[in-house]
Length: 521
Image 1 (tube, helix red, strand yellow):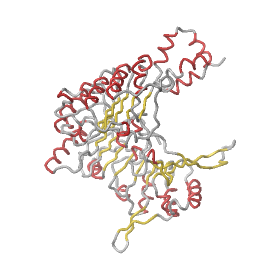
Image 2 (image 1 turned 45 degrees about the vertical axis):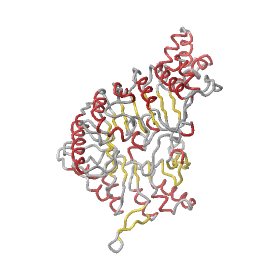
Image 3 (image 1 turned 90 degrees about the vertical axis):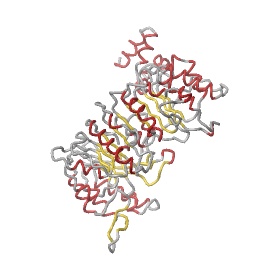
Image 4 (image 1 turned 60 degrees about the vertical axis):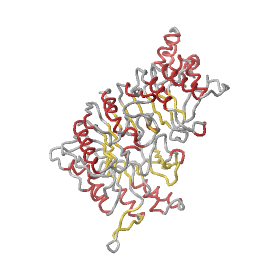
């Protein structure tokens, strides 16, 4: 008898209510399926009562499902994640209960549907993650938004005792002024606390009349580890979060009046100074800010402009262990001049501009540990005192890539541009085989075509098969769809990787907030 069979038999001897209690503590569906595969009895218990009630991701109103969840508290209580996405968001597959839902239920009005959502949320005692992209759904007949419904849903959400990860975007909070929601009552979001991850995207979160309420709301979660708010948020510099590790500061309102620019800059700099444990920073700013030399001593991933680096470079005592680097306005020559970053730790690098091919060889030597590289499709060449964009010559590009001895993932359109584009796939096949021979660790490339539903390019996955004696017997590759949550090409290197299973399904800035950012593909 196998170990799994012994466990299965022992489980069957327990009372049903104890079995149910044990299964309710299992978070992941793969773990539930592993248990279900051990016996038919276990399968009948686990499927679908548990496998379909861990995560909900839906793009449509789904009135029958919400009615079902409102009626079945015994099933709703085990849901861990809820994602309410826009109809156009195909970045990940939908997931929701099907087997036990009565699909013949007549479609109810919107007020009843919202009441059922609120009731279901109150049942979800184990809910840890909530994502809401709040937009009008014209196809469903919802041409306008009723923010009274938003307040009702957030009031129910505030009663979830285990909520740890929250993201609001779209029109969420658009009606809030001076911290008040509908009927001039306090906005229910402010009562939520003890979060570990928070993402607030939208112009409302940069509204000065709400800033004091937003700051107090953030401070209600002192153990927060991942934070994304507009860089224009007034008073951000007063937030001290000792557990904070990952930060995103998108520019939400666009151009900012000169009179406000200095105050906002000082607030962000104070925030970065007083939160010295930050490891991942994505600062979406068009201006250059000189950070104090002693700021961000633990920084490992940076996506911003070269002005941010300039201040950090002045430090003579701190060598930051940067692992991922994306400077939007820096060319390859600027990267060769970096001094106060530990060159042995860099693993992922996005190069926005290339003026000298020789600088790429220097980067390969200086940062020998690079395993992930993104190059633009063309580089800049000086022609009669005028800089023009030209394609790489294929032999040049192959020489450059082979100088990165540990390269595993190559992103960007450079290889396809060097070959001649989508129309020359036969030449591309030869180029890929040549590159595989030159880069023995290479396992993934960008393809030339995109998968529109997920708004990302397809991937080329490389396979190698070794024989009994360890020698390479066969090499081949296949074209795959981009995985859920994958963001490519123009995206920063920090967000090409899945992170928290929820936020990886949304737009780039959101992906920054969740845990696997440093170590995925």
